[in-house]
Amino acid sequence: MKECSKFSIGTDLEEVDRFKLDLKKDKNFLEKIFSKNELKYCFSRGNPAQHLAVRFAAKEATVKALYGLNFKRVDFKKIQIIKKRRKNWH
Image 1 (cartoon, rainbow, N blue to C red):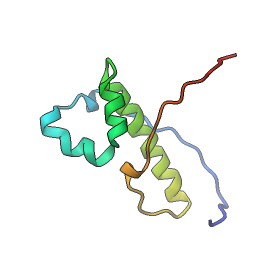
Image 2: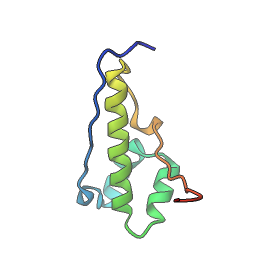
Image 3: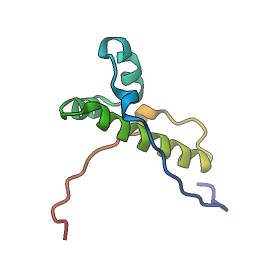
């Protein structure tokens, strides 16, 4: 991997309302961006739009970070954002 001479950090934010989708109309968009596991998780939650927005922002931040490391074309669907349960919060 190419050595990085500059390191930067940022934040990606998404409007939750943007992900309050018409499932019939926007199915192609969802399947292009999210894995089956991500969609299953998001739509099992009370507010799927919130969970979709979080995953989209994380994927976008990952793509930007990889671009800075000379990975010019990264498919959003190849990045999977999962929720890992923590055993202890102490």
